[in-house]
Image 1 (cartoon, rainbow, N blue to C red):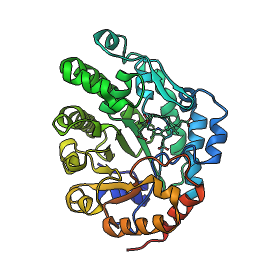
Image 2 (cartoon, rainbow, N blue to C red; image 1 turned 30 degrees about the vertical axis):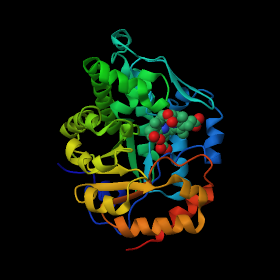
Image 3 (spheres, rainbow, N blue to C red; image 1 turned 90 degrees about the horizontal axis):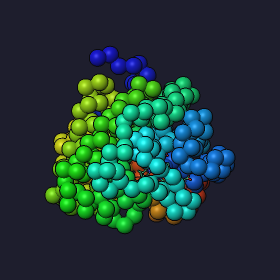
Length: 350
Ligand code: 1CP
């Protein structure tokens, strides 16, 4: 397998492959978002958030904004994990100040109304965004495609919204595991096609967001978190052996060291609750790790942020590590604090 030449120039892709780097690469989850005035300006031009995600020129423009401002080592496609339910024909909308609302799928009848027929046509704007980005990104910046993990996406599809501890999906999984498995399988299959199309359009690495993995007890993780991600990972490896995948299963703590072996991902995203020494001793030996600073430290800034960045880099850097936050950057983050973070990491040397 011959790799594209450009791969070797990108610090982020090197780190994911476990190759030596001069300093850890960095990007931050939700780096294109409401804390940036230039994001809010573009966002204000389209009221409907799903339409905004499916406007390739605007999605491309906001993806590039944090790269232009801060010089991250990777850009993440601007879209949302709920574009997959939209592609399956579920009605998805975002209510200002409240979050996503979907017509809930609660039984076999609801499941029967979803379909993969026409999926690609409904989400093709996302693939066009990736194509635009592949052309417009600086050559040393890697392009990350993404999707939600089937479990996390299903929690929204079943409840019709976020929050409430993902109770609706957890209860369906206990009461009718075979029925719930059919929903997970449908989302898994759509996600494989969706991520494969992103790679064909130019994505160089992929992240799978399992934000609500931690709402499941440990004995349910194998079936609803590890197995679907493993299936996605294996299907993509068969077609694109050189494209690395990051698995971000938030809140699974002591089960985190099993994620890479159970799913085949090259890198493991780590939330802020996991101690750095635990990550170094129990996760990093088998995978590149990505994370995990508390997003509120970027709101606070100053010495508290500076010292934590230094400690994180010293404990987990320089190799097999991607600096990131433990979850998305929050809207109240002062943009100049992100600038200070970027400067500190760019200037750091082991
Ligand atoms: O009007 C706006 O600007 C809405 C805010 C917003 C943004 C900026 C939403 C609504 N989604 C996004 C973009 C987004 N979402 C990205 C873009 C790339 C980036 O810069 O990181 C990504 C990767 C996501 C993924 C996503 N969406 C996740 C997984 C990651 C995470 O943060 O946990 C989840 C859970 C969602 C659902 C979602 N999208 C938006 C909202 C308000 C929610 C609900 C969150 C919840 O239930 O608490």
